[in-house]
Amino acid sequence: MNITLQISTAQGPAECQMFARFVLQRLLAEAKQQGIAADVQAALESKHGILSAVVGLSGAAAEALVARWLGTVQWICPSPLRPKHPRKNWYVGVFRLPDVPPLPDDGAVRLQTCRAGGKGGQHVNKTESAVRATHLASGLSVRVESERSQHANKKRALALLAQKLAAAAANQQGVQAQAQHAQLYQLARGNPVRVFAGAAFQEKTPGDTAVS
Image (cartoon, rainbow, N blue to C red; front, side, top):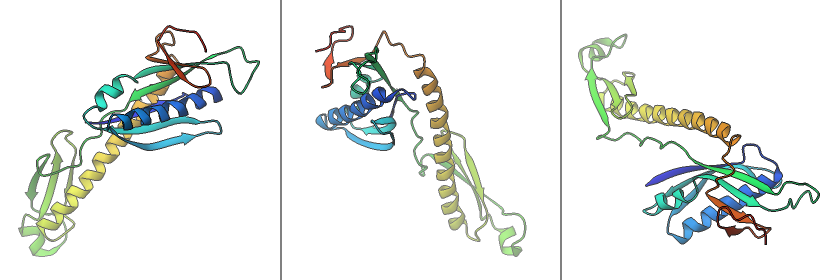
């Protein structure tokens, strides 16, 4: 099971950025304890912590771990940066990004041969050296006839299809990330999935507003 998570403050203040860094560290620590492979794929750092991070998780227990984090995470603590600030509740969002489609292999791609067109001499025109590769799950396809041999065109077609799939996945993640950032501005702050309190980030039961 491969899962990609985004941790984001939605451009929240420095206190949220501090909390987001803790959330990332806590998530990585819990993954390690449970034998889940975790990889920080990207992190946008700030002076006080992080604005956002993208984490990849894989392993049998990954789904269960993710379920404990998805949603709004709350930190109850007087600001350690602005002692006179009246606010003491800070929020970070944890969202799941779309699954990236697998790179094409022989079982996921339909290969079709056809005659190459255009210039290239009689050899190119009379043999079915051109190759169309179609990714069955997404419907994306490429056609290659730039090489003289069918084998070379097949190899190039699979490489180009992999690039096209990666670009489509990146675009999908970007759209999803924008939507999730918008959601963060309307966080259901009264219903956090996990709550931490105090300078030591002690975990509390959701609904418990006491700060030790």
